[in-house]
Length: 197
Picture 1 (cartoon, one colour):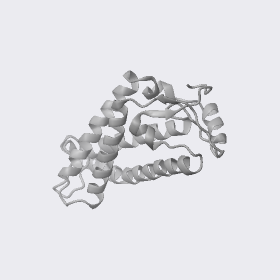
Picture 2 (cartoon, rainbow, N blue to C red; picture 1 turned 60 degrees about the horizontal axis):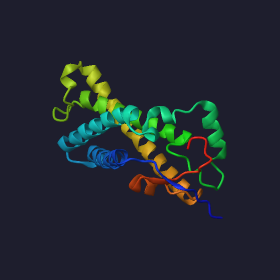
Picture 3 (tube, one colour; picture 1 turned 45 degrees about the vertical axis):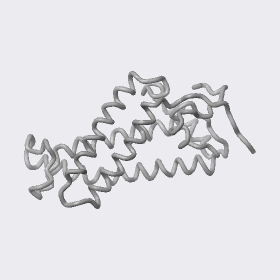
Picture 4 (cartoon, rainbow, N blue to C red; picture 1 turned 120 degrees about the vertical axis):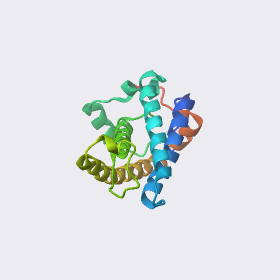
């Protein structure tokens, strides 16, 4: 059965550019950190890029268009649980922006990326080559803790990315809702009777 809804312009150009730039920087930085050369200079540049993008997203979360502002997708437990109960239905949600579960994913991803950037700046893996630019500002134990946390949180970041990709596939093939095209074009099908529309 076909489930369609009118299209609305949801994702602005800044948000779409942020999203795809973050994808490139995170995938490149993570890959360089895991499989890259011994000297991690390029990995650091990707980290600086992610830091800049996070600063942009923080600003845009308060000053950007309504669907992007943090306050527009902060949901309470009741709204989140109500959405979770409907998630298994084989119909698109046509939610205008981030749905309650997607909102949790956004906040988790931003928090883990901030942890990655922060610990990377102070990390010292004790190899005399790849210390973070601010590692000299903290004592040895703190720098080692930052390095270990950076390594562990990279696994958490990978888990969140896999979960994100799984959600995209779930929505596409189970619920019949394409979440990728709107992040390219900006236009998304949105139910007119939706309380958030």
